[in-house]
Length: 132
Image (cartoon, rainbow, N blue to C red):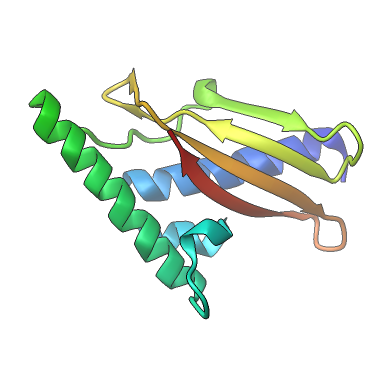
């Protein structure tokens, strides 16, 4: 997969994941990317891991809302907050970070995406997590 095509595919997947999370459609996010193994317990499905991720994220947003006194949400995707770094040793791998915002203010967390190009199907396989 050409680098520009790979970058466009990564951007599309990240956009879809972020927009699904913004819409609280975690099942939809799970359809386009896998949650990282850290969200999975033994014998968990991706859906169960996504549910654990959802619970953690919603609790974090609620805690900030309670502490600050204003509602915290995940805004829809904005390409300005996306960074993509390609693996220097493997053209089929990349790492992307996305810093979500709430009402256009940066949140104290970011999403991390490990991306691998699937040459045969011309698509990208993605695992994601959150970091603070």
